Image (tube, rainbow, N blue to C red; front, side):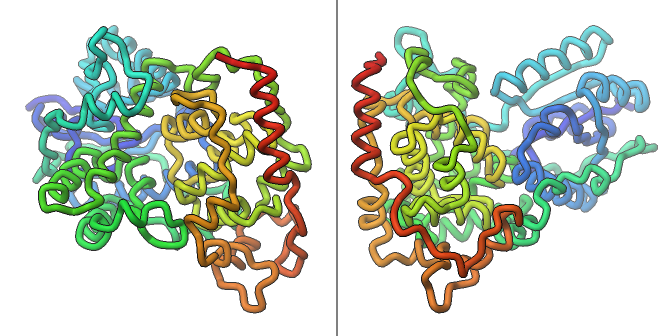
Length: 473
């Protein structure tokens, strides 16, 4: 009988369209799924770490239904996997590829360790539609602008999603596993976990249901409704794609079927899926995207670095006096997510009106988004800040009031999240005060700011003056 295969799970918490899992099953012999609490997991922010714990729990149940189980271990990945090879007699370790610099370095070390010990080590595709090195310009380089990238991939063939294996062979003796509760992945959420939990849609089965509902009821109007934060006009699949609870290939093929059937919003949604691809394309080819200015000439721009100034604290607490910005920040504390249009507005206000470094905002989102994604978060912040890949990098200064008038004309979004001043504020707005740290000492009875901490006209003028003085690139 073939010796066991260790399936090292990371952000691929599903059974269907899982190339590494299918390869492990096809190899023959037992398959032992493993999740490792390593330094990268330790380093996650409060909300993404908590949400990962929910996903791990759901994946464990899904494996159990197949007669398998999920083994949990803590430590450095290379050491944990080597120890499991010794314990189980495994002859191979398979996993799904990652593309950010920290994961690449870790995975390279794991592969070198395993191969040196005579163990087969394979990484498989599965997180993206296209491997970053497979999409090249006519000059053989990587793409630096989104639209040419979209044009290059929009007509490419994408393999059909794989079905879930009918059976996952279990070993005669399972290795010992740690207890997920002992990992305490939600500890840093404190009281916010109970507030956020109803807004999470956890696991593969839930993700499949959400995709089906979106295809049946939402895709046709997606182009018209996707920018309206007060409406449920998007798929809501960002948290599931982040953890691989649904595959990007399945989403792509669903979009293509909808387009063939004449759904008006299908191509627009496909472009959003490819924006995610573009983010990983860039973070693979230019790893500095994750932590430094993508446009290196911006390294000397006079952004403020402090993350605890009164202005930045007002931004973090959703008390800038700019209602659209504040509503968006409060939505994040209650739900763990933020509407994409709102993300652009709050990022612009921080980096342009408050002239604060995008890294301050990036780190805050890393801490509070349950749908956090390393590449999409980095690209989104840099695109808005002006230091990222864009044809007109800094002159785009979102006016929150104009954005609110256009995309929240009746004020439903702002009323949903800002309790102060309302005679009967909705539960969503009141939940904000249950989710935030008690040390902030905020309540619905406290007066909402009478005016913005930085006026919209004054902030825009200061931002453009700083740009003119610096003249980067």
